[in-house]
Image: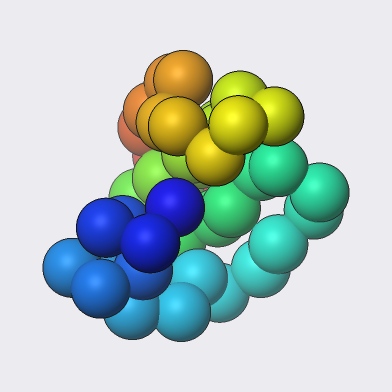
Length: 46
């Protein structure tokens, strides 16, 4: 989580272990494991 925060900045939204970044017409949904390691990145068009 720390590395993502350092590289990408604060997310537009947080829901538990899920962070959402909005970049233009794309939404990046990052899911973290309980230990803080990145588990999944999903890209969705708005």
